[in-house]
Amino acid sequence: MNTNITSKEPVIQLKGLSKSFDGKQIITGLDLNVNDGEFLTILGPSGCGKTTVLRLIAGFEDADQGQIIIAGQDVTAVHAEQRHVNTVFQSYALFPHMTVFENVAFGLRMQKVPEKEIKPRVMEALQMVQLEQFAPRQPHQLSGGQQQRVAIARAVVNKPKVLLLDESLSALDYKLRKQMQLELKQLQRRLGITFIFVTHDQEEALSMSDRIIVMRDGRIEQDGTPREIYEEPSNLFVARFIGEINVFDATVIERIDEKRIKAIVEGREAVIHCDLDVQQHAPLKVLLRPEDIRLKEINENEESWGLMGHVRERTYKGMTLDSVVEIETGKSVMVSEFFNEDDPDVDHSLDQKVAITWVESWEVVLADDEEA
Ligand code: ATP
Image (cartoon, helix red, strand yellow):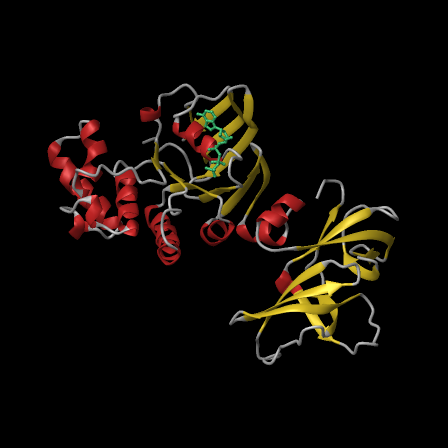
């Protein structure tokens, strides 16, 4: 292991990485730095190239163009076994006829590690994933979550700088998956190993990662913390891919001050927070998460400033009351209101008229220059 790097230097640097298969460009000029000890998630829809990025880092695929630097060393032309990375695949790929101990020991034996070193190292790795007592069992005698932990023990036994995890929780049922998400995050902190985790599940990405890369068609659409990605999506694709969001069409009337503009939003005049440099009549998209919207019941013949509509669906969700409000333009707006001390009895009848407001400045405003 290279110990010369400081924690400030990225442990992985991808520079201008490109890859095509059968003449089709899959990864295009990808630049990415991964910091030492970071839990980084690559998130994106099926087929966007997430696994290909992992396979390029691991050395299972050769890049057409670009450079891969791991722990300060240019490994672009270095064989997979000589890179300081290990991979945990979705299938876990455990050897079914070997015991848990032998599965974890396999890599060390391949590297011709002396026999007397193998036992303590395997047991240490099994201890990290709290499976020491399962050492003599075979994989089929373990639950899905336990098999996943064996796969991780096997991957960390030779102390890689970086662990690559490809959709490694997707085979588990919902409850176990939630539990493993937590365990994996705790394990990563304990081990201090950099994790690069691939998933198409946005909730999983938000809850586990220090940083998320959102990919589409072989390119990075946004790079940020979970909070930045969720609260400040940089475009409509990211906004829609990460959770539910309402997209309102708007047109600029005039700027009020540095932070606010007056605009027509879905046919109604409204004040929105916007620091984009926009001209009069410029089209905008105003994005609002369902939980940022507030509904105020009004009488059927009452007029209110801003958006109005009628409740067309209401669903009790335990912590929230979720409503669908049809506004005057015919658009459906999703609203999720929490029950809390200030408003313990939040409830709306079907067809109730409501005024729509939102938490000031929580709207995201984008220039309308891309296809919806
Ligand atoms: P998923 O979430 O479905 O696993 P992904 O984002 O990980 O998708 P990749 O597995 O990286 O996507 O695949 C990206 C594209 O590259 C797909 O269209 C896939 O068919 C193609 N592809 C991947 N590997 C190869 C290969 N060895 N030969 C030909 N095409 C490939």
